[in-house]
Image (cartoon, rainbow, N blue to C red; front, side, top):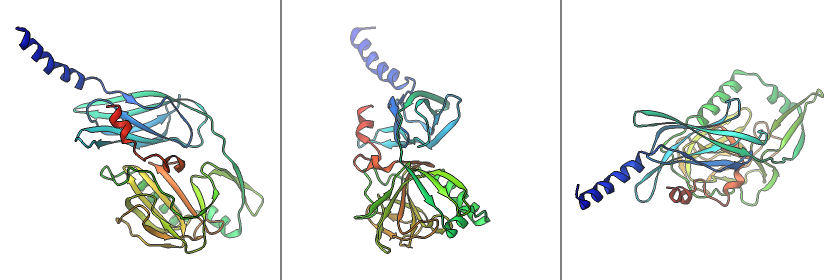
Length: 308
């Protein structure tokens, strides 16, 4: 083989070798409860991406489906966002990615360590109305719960609506409760129950407008037993903002709304201690702390391009 032909052969062979290298998971080494991990999978675009966070007993603690993001130059990058549950203890965990590449199925793993986070505690005394809703075992409550979880666990792979940071849903709203608050409910009969607050509570006058935190598709707009007048918007595949207890709803299911568009008004419907908006960010079905995305984008495309 002559030298020019040999070098031409190498120029053809090297990209093929690099392109066929085994995919690997790129993610942070450390995170914390309530945070969101952005994951990239190196190599050729993969299909059927499912990402889970697992403990040392191999129990899946959170889950979301990945997708392929297309760069401005037309190259596709496999990525996923995964929420970290707020109730997890610090220590070692595993990120597990199941995906397909051509006819092959892959399982990729990477360790991640959770740091400790301190949350506030809050005691809430339930009145008779709230206690009745809390204890309700009606078929309606069960049907609405199944519908809620089905929506959060069925991402739309084409939902590429909002990449930039989120905005506050209420202008000049007063923050009255925080994500991750440990709540203890005092019942009228003296018994107690506990839960973790999954979002932020924002107080404003009844009828104050509530705005969409980002561009997205309305996947639920309905009056529900526990959450009152409720809207859910999908911004990216498996990335949802959730709005509870509104007085009115001004959008319909299937509608594409713009960031800061009015979607309803402040109220006190459902299981509410008073007028406020309960606002959540969910990655899949996992509630996460939305504060991370007021300054940084939902999808860090710069990081994706930089790690290619």
